[in-house]
Image (cartoon, rainbow, N blue to C red; front, side):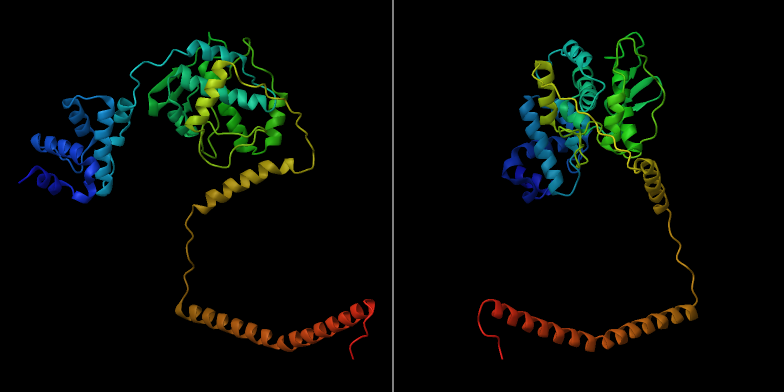
Amino acid sequence: MSLTQRVDTIAPAGAIGARYRHDWQLFADWCTAVEASALPADPLTIALFLDEHPAATGTHRRRVTAINTVHTRCGYPAPGTAQALRERLTRRTRPRPDLRDAATDVIRRLPTAGWPGGLFGRRDALLLTLTCRLGLSPIQVGRLQRSDVTFDGRTLRIPSHGIFIPHDPHESPRTEQVAVYLRWARLQAFTDRTPSNRWLGESLTNATPVTDDSVTGLQLLPAIRHNGPLLPSFDKWGHASLSRVGLSRRAITRILTAHLSGTTSTREQRQVKFFDDGWADAVEDVVEAISEDEKDSTEPVEPPELSSEELAARYEAGLAARRGTAKAMADLEPAFEELDDRTDELLARIQDLLEVVEGSPPRA
């Protein structure tokens, strides 16, 4: 049996394709030699395969792409998308520059109060903390959901990335990592209960700017009512994007570059016009009513138990109602005909009047 025939017995030729045939043959032959499953394969098998076939990072990426493609075309999940493999294949050949000190200086200068400066300042402070100080990539930050980050009253946790940060009472609350997160998380909790930019702007306008002497409250955060991206995008007026996705990699890179290079523009603080129109008192009731409706909608509805006689009676009642409606609609036909006649008469009179106005003799 030829090499191509042996490979085709593992995966159909149409699923391999000419582009990935060489890389797939290498992987399939190695799996056969070590008595491992090539289709479907698990991430550990791929890791061992790459370890025993040293090559450049680009070559390894091509091999993993070939393995993933064949699995996907054959209806299996792509094993090469495991987090450990992706981190290894996307690791930089040169270490990232240490931007922690530069990011800390920028965070110290960002506003924590005012509208909309306080909104963007708090969000960007957390963005700088996650990327420059904790080492997450822009893609990882953009994919973070609010529920991915927790705080137990002492420690900030991002379990999906192995990050556990205890609160440091000796660092300034303007730059301390837990304090930076809590300022943003409490702002999102506020919008959970009061989904109004008017109230959010009023709150930030009246907020006291954070200083080195401020005290960080370590109270537990309220339960998340509406999960979503940890760092959403906003327009220049502070309105959140309607899409339920976080900042894109390009947007995060642009924001980081602007802050670290000192090219950010100062946002004009706007006066929030607060009108007491009576609706503000209803916001909390509406939010609670929506939450109660969502809770009630999850409970199954039991259908009523009806006997055969009751079902027959309801069926006859429905038929009688439809017959009555059809009869009532039939009685309306003469009324519609009379309405059409009167409409034609009125149109004829209007035409006569127009002809008189224009100087032509009226119709006989």
